[in-house]
Length: 190
Figure (cartoon, rainbow, N blue to C red):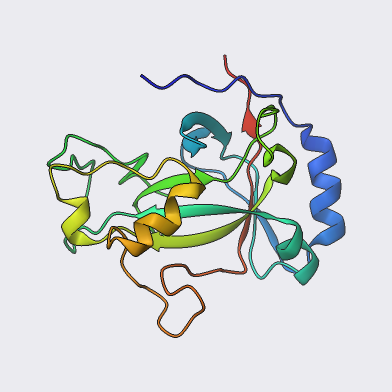
C-alpha cells in the first residue's frame, strides 16, 4: 500500500502574484469538477487543488519556470463514457469525468514540497506545464499493467513500448510540451 506524502501547503496568494507577474496569456479559473485530484510523485500519491487557474498560451517565462505535469492518457474506444477498469483491475486517476480534453489519464509530477530526501524537492512549482503522453493499447490492456508512478520511470516506459509515440519528429516523440500551464498547489494530507 502506498503512503500519502506529508506535504507542506503552498500559499495561494503568493502563487496568484507569481502567475500575474509571469503570464502572457489569458487566465481562467476552473469552476466545475472535483476540488482535488490524485497525482503520483516519486512512487507515492498526493492530492492537488483543481480549483486554481489554467493559463493558455503562457508566456515564455512562465513556461520555463513551470514544472511538468505529465498527463498519461489511457486509450479508450471512441464514445466511451463513465469510469473504466482495465483488465489488470487498475482505474485511471482521472476516470472519465469532465472537465478534461483527455477524460482518462493519470498525473505524474517530478517532485513536491516536503520531499526533503530527494534532490528534486526544489524543482516543484505550483505552476505545472501540461505534457500529454499516452499508454500503448497493448500495455494499458495487459493484465500485467502497472501505472507509471514516478517521472524517473518515463524513459524506461518509452524504451520498452509501454508508451505510444504521439509527437512524430519531436526530440521526444512520446511527449507533447504544450503552452498550457495549470496552477495546482499540492494539498496537505488531511
